[in-house]
Image 1 (spheres, rainbow, N blue to C red):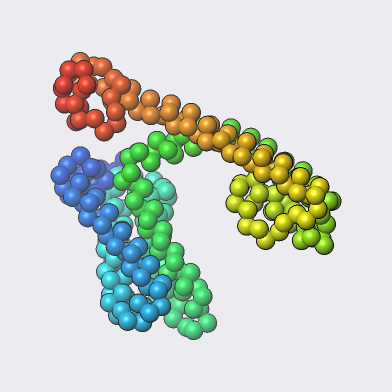
Image 2 (cartoon, rainbow, N blue to C red):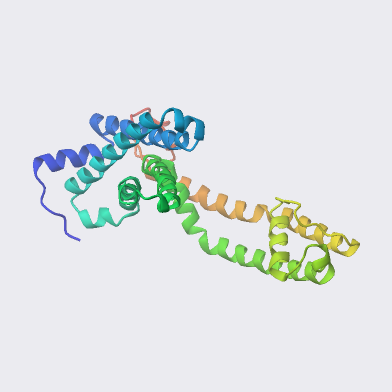
Length: 272
């Protein structure tokens, strides 16, 4: 997609808002992070009934200050972006829109019949916390590790699902509705809760054979718990290694530095 020609003002705003290399860009990012954290804090306080009753006016004012600030930020991002359509439909563009949309939709639903919808819209503001993702550099490494290991994790997920169906069917056959296992889906639910070592205790086997099957399910859960962790750790290690390789010293050209390193550990030359 071809980039639009930009005016000097648009280029300057783009460097400040989308970039983090300049002092102005860093100050803008820091200001925005504080705004996000404070807006989420206001949302949490607004959900506490006695605080809401005592500080309703102040909370409403603070909410609209944050909403208008995020709305202005969203509009400026669209204005200075060289590829507006790409930004609007990107992950961060959608998150930026979700951070302001509920407040404006709430104005269109003032009736008492819409109280539940309004409450949902107010809670949707929590998506503002996702705006922090763009400022977490290491989050990109985690995302890539998850993406690259998705096939292995899917195979693992299907294996656990098959085991859950087998154990659930056995428990339904052995325990039956009299002991709480009223259906195979509910027995599968019990199996998943047991294998994941959560163990709510809302359904428990009563017969000795059911307890043996339950013990086998628990041991299976502990045995397979490390599998996805190992898969993700291996991919994460590879991504971190790639990140170190990309960070090359301009003085000696050697790689292998930590991502937060400031100076080369071989020649002492600055890396930033």
